[in-house]
Length: 358
Ligand code: NAI
Ligand code: MG
Image 1 (spheres, helix red, strand yellow):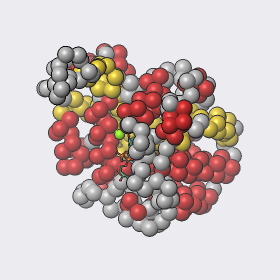
Image 2 (cartoon, helix red, strand yellow; image 1 turned 90 degrees about the vertical axis):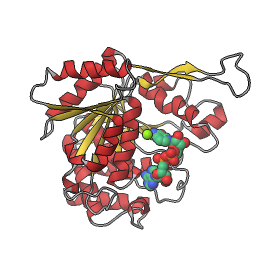
Image 3 (cartoon, protein in one colour; image 1 turned 180 degrees about the vertical axis):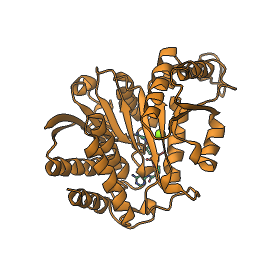
Image 4 (cartoon, helix red, strand yellow; image 1 turned 45 degrees about the vertical axis):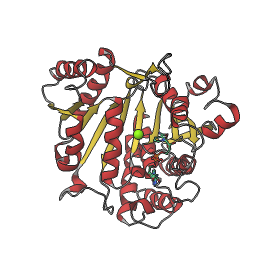
């Protein structure tokens, strides 16, 4: 029997609602499977904490969660707190502070959901984005308020950092992931025609690493063309590896194509054994629907499945994913994907399917 300790950070808005649903599923699965137990430590960090304490998390926050087996994260963002403060103060502080260098974002097409992609074999499609998660465009290097420019003449500099090691570990992970899939293919996405330093380095590392994986088919594509490919040739996609910013944008596109931002799970992986990894849905705190009980919990429940897989429970992870598919196939859907079920009803249906599978 495995046992693990979760650091739970619900965050703001619908983050709090969906994280409860994910924990309900984990609780139920723990009881029915009898293969694992877990305990949760809650950390009330986020924008409300910021409004009270002037910071997004406790100043010793990273130390408080660094010995947990995994972090389960809702979402952050609040209309009265600037987004760059909430993002840098919590989510990026954890991803970068714990060197969670690979952000895994699968794109799947669930039965019973119409979605926005017009493709004859839609339900057979699935691909996974591997996002560089600690440097690139989100390195945070830059500055503002350069003096002496006068009104209306402010200059801001925002630099990207690409290190050979940073590129190599995430590209290598994409190849390793490809080896586990039926079709072994990795597509690298950059904009190296316009960004001639960092992204050319990325391209060179991709070509070098690819030589070590002769059994994996490779492709390289510029990010603007890749945005079109997501819509026009999704059957070409298998494992797609891209920089922090590019993969961030492409993953929202992928989840929108599959039906809703609320469906997409993600894993922020630290794979070197020093720090915990973090699991969260791709979406944000959705203030427009917060507090109404209608948020789609599937992205966060799917993130729990990614967490179990990471913790060495692949069969239990598959059970969650199969139960999600069974629920959507039954037409138990929240409003964002054309249904009229509540957050809780969707979770209840997923839980009922888990029970049936035992
Ligand atoms: P968002 O993802 O919160 O919402 C975008 C749209 O998708 C909204 O119309 C929302 O209602 C809908 N949506 C998102 N998740 C949904 C779900 N589970 N069920 C049903 N509908 C859902 O992105 P937005 O509006 O750009 O940002 C809102 C706040 O979230 C901002 O403060 C932003 O900085 C923050 N944010 C936080 C992230 C995180 O914590 N990882 C990621 C993205 C944004
Ligand atoms: Mg995003």
